[in-house]
Image (cartoon, rainbow, N blue to C red; front, top):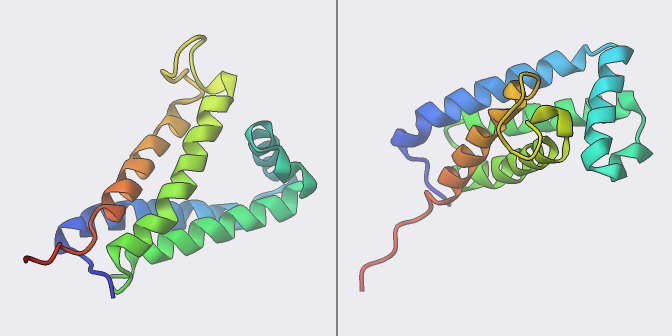
Length: 140
């Protein structure tokens, strides 16, 4: 079974609380918000066009709640929590990079509209850190 390092708890709690809050908020998204989120996602991930806005937002909320829960539960190993967070955050960073309105022309520096999404790079960094917090190598 994997380890959970006490030193990683602050980053796990911060990211987990953020994702839990975000997921719970999306559970009550109205049709307008669901439509905006769905449109944004399908711009980078056309496969989501097969889902309607409401099912997409419910799926997104469930993913955020599941990953957030894994991060805040201390008995979930760092590597497992990182394995859940890193690809999710990578998808968010990809979405940011593929959405022209989120960054300045010819740059990945965020526009005023993109500052909120630019923070997803921190989630990716946290996920990768947790993935790298695996078992110590055995001494020979």
